[in-house]
Length: 341
Ligand code: KG4
Ligand code: ZN
Image 1 (tube, rainbow, N blue to C red):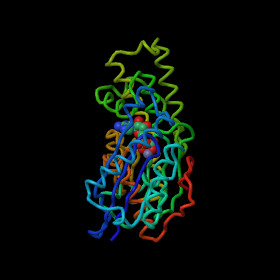
Image 2 (cartoon, rainbow, N blue to C red):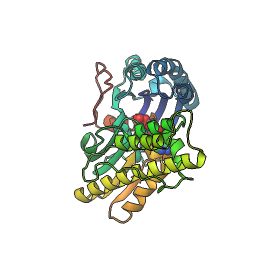
Image 3 (tube, rainbow, N blue to C red):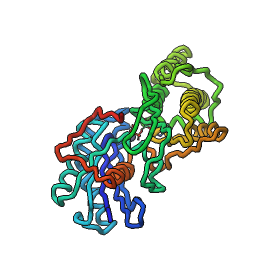
Image 4 (cartoon, rainbow, N blue to C red):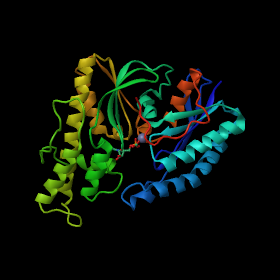
C-alpha cells in the first residue's frame, strides 16, 4: 500500500493532499488549500516575499489540519512530494523543505515534482489511471501556454508555445486595464457571459503559425480603451465592460481552438486534454469540446476542482513516479525556471 503526502507552494496557494492506492487505484483521500488571493488582491498581483511568509505560517497549519482529519501518522506514509518548480523561488522553498524534512524524519522517499507536469497529468487524476496514454495536452496557466505531444510518463515534446504572454497572464493584464480585480480570469469569464463577442474585433495573432501570441491582443484592448478615452479611474460602464470581456475572451478562444485543431489533425491524435488554471474557463472548454466533437479525437478536460493550483496533481504525479521506483535525491533543489521538456 502506498500513501503519499504532497505539498504545493509554487505561487500563492499553500496546498496539501494525500493520495492512497489501497483500492488498487491512486485516489485523493483529502486535500486542503489555503488561498492568499485576498492578501495579494490589494497589490493587484502576487508579491513573492509576502507569499513565502504566508506559506511559512499557513503550511504547518494545513498539514496539521489534514493529519487530524484523516487520522494517519507520519510513519504511515510511503513517500513525500513537493513542487520543485517552476514558480516563485521563495515560495517553492517552503514546501520543498517541508517535504524533505518529512522524508528525512521518516526515512521514506522524497519526490520533487514539476508543477507543469502536475497540471499536464491532472485530467487523469479523477480516474486514477496508472499509465499515461499518448495524447495531445493543452496546458494553459498564469505562466504557461503550450501544446504538448505526450508519449508516456516523462515523455513530453512541446509542439507549440506562447512567444510572449501566457493566456492567464493576458486575462490578468486585460482585467487590470478594465479595472477588474485579481485574478482576472474568473472575473472576465463572468462578465463575458453578458457581453457581445462581436462588439470589438480584436486580433487573432500568428494565424498561420503553430505558436501562440497574446501580447498583440492585450495591446489591442489597451489601444481600443485609450482611443475611446478610457483610462484608470474612468472606465466603461458595465455593459460595455462586458463587451470588452466577451470580445477579448473570444479572440483567446479562437486562437486556442485553431492551433489545437491543427495539431490534432497533423498528429492524428485520438485524445486531447486541457488543464491549468485557465481551463477553469467553461467558454474555452465548451468551444474545444464542440470543435473536437466533429473529429475522431476524444476530449478530456481537467475536472474543475483540479484546474487551478492544487497539491492533488502533485501527489498523483509523484505516485506515478513512485510506481516506477523513481524517487528524487534529497540534494535536488528547487528550480524557479524548471522546464517541462
Ligand atoms: O494554474 P494556475 O492556478 O497557476 C499557475 O500555475 O499559473 O493558473 C492561474 C491563472 C491566472 O492567470 C488566472 O487568471 C487564470 O489562471 N484563471 C482563469 C480562470 N480562472 C483562473 N482564466 C480564465 N478564465 C477563468 N475562469
Ligand atoms: Zn499552476
